[in-house]
Length: 245
Ligand SMILES: Nc1ncnc2c1ncn2[C@@H]1O[C@H](COP(=O)(O)OP(=O)(O)OP(=O)(O)O)[C@@H](O)[C@H]1O
Ligand SMILES: [Mg+2]
Image (cartoon, rainbow, N blue to C red; front, side, top):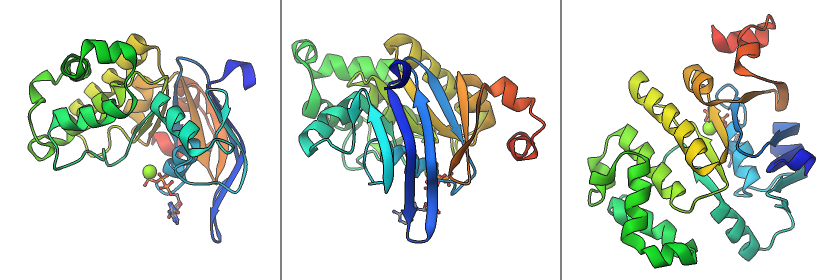
């Protein structure tokens, strides 16, 4: 791993037939860092984070997560690694037929540790819901929740396992500006409370401004720029300026 990075993506190539989505893409994520990945719709952002936890295979290159080469892990080892890497799907992926409590317990029971067993599921579920400001929703069904609340519940379901890394896929898409801002601040409080490192995929410039310590721009399948939000904001490069206009 480069300089203690928690994720090291090196020269990764991923194509679907003739569609070359990632072209020797490289990036690293440092401990307790919030790294934003900015790219146009269809540029390969979701594909990239799915490759990181090997939800989809890639053609060549290497990806190391928490010191493990994801390509050589067997399914059991991959399962253990995935419990340490929370994934917030673009679609939230809550189970619609389960209550909020059941959604959270479902993720907990597969991976809970001794400490959590001692505390008991009720207390652990309540703590995660309190972290996202929604303890009162414990018995509600996903259909009864607003878009912003669903995002928070999906985050609580990820947080319940105290992951070392969280991958956020478009955490604010489809939300109004005030709710988006609340979610962005929630991402910061999670980073501070649990010392998590995060990859935040977004085209919401405000979310990236609030949450990111560093930004990678994914253009034409490569890492086109890698800098702070402030420096990119002031760039004269037309391809970078495009994102801020
Ligand atoms: N399973 C798949 N099979 C074939 N092509 C795919 C598959 N998944 C993604 N793609 C293609 O890969 C490219 C990148 O898709 P991806 O979902 O990563 O975009 P994105 O940057 O996340 O876009 P958005 O901002 O709209 O979510 C697109 O051209 C898409 O059609
Ligand atoms: Mg996407």
